[in-house]
Length: 399
Image 1 (cartoon, rainbow, N blue to C red):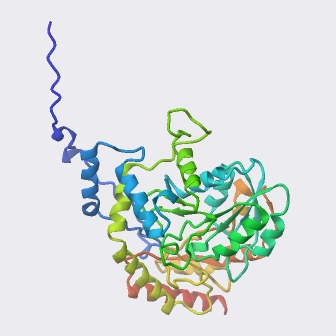
Image 2 (cartoon, rainbow, N blue to C red; image 1 turned 90 degrees about the vertical axis):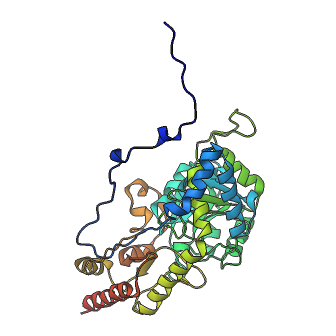
Image 3 (cartoon, rainbow, N blue to C red; image 1 turned 180 degrees about the vertical axis):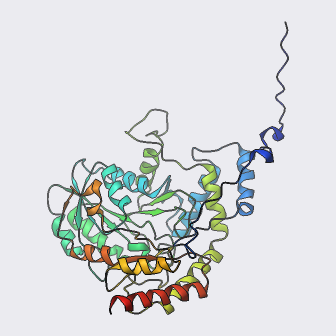
């Protein structure tokens, strides 16, 4: 019996889901929380749709497609480094591991790094087959003491130096480049929250050390999930891209042990739409920053140079006393908080065995830090309410 021919005509309606099959996937938010600690806001569907139509037309969905190329180019311009010095990856944690691996650091050597950072930093170091060695931070800079790092880096079993830009605060990159040159140990900068800090003509211009930025939804500029590696050496950036595409370099023969860490065209579409609307988005972040700077009690310590010509998407304050009662008081009045960096990586079970220096500042900051609500749409009234509660909580703690 003859079979019926298959109709291969382009029928886009075949790809349209019936409205009866779509159900709400709205998140559950606790009833007792009036002001959440974070409420990310990425480009809307209307903003992204023109790029999605390009994907439909191109029928290119991943593997360094045209939208990915365009995003890489625009981010290179934004940071003033050029297309060829940016490598896009699935997230910053992976980007940090790939950046360490691209430098050819011997496996099993120690990587000097602060314990006062998000646990992803330690995960990235371990993912690069290195051993974290935790050092303390200085109270004023929230970063390791450069002299201490330079001294430790002289040891034969130290392979790399890992420095964190605390919550996006600018670093003296010339200083760290000098240490890298004198010690022969590469410096990798975890600038996860420093998207705006690194902008062209911003307060922390890229230098020689390799830098990794997070493009997570909770950051000041996000794609949902994503990251970018910035380097002064185009060959190193291409090596990171090679490691992110199975080790393929001009052929389908893997040249290195590698992984799949590419972003898709859909992720790039979100990024391109975000860059289209970056200026009004940055203005909203700037407004929230200024409102907090005016309303916060003077007794709390803010990230170094907080909000001075740069914006970030979080606000961590160091209280003069243990933050536990403070966060409890805020929660009782409907204000959510978070300890973004916890009590230090060395207290995480996965990294408790790692070698470390004494960490008195890290332990103090971990005990006294509180992440306050910080998102683009916070009103002046909400910020005043949060700061008034914080002030009352601190006064109660001192009585």
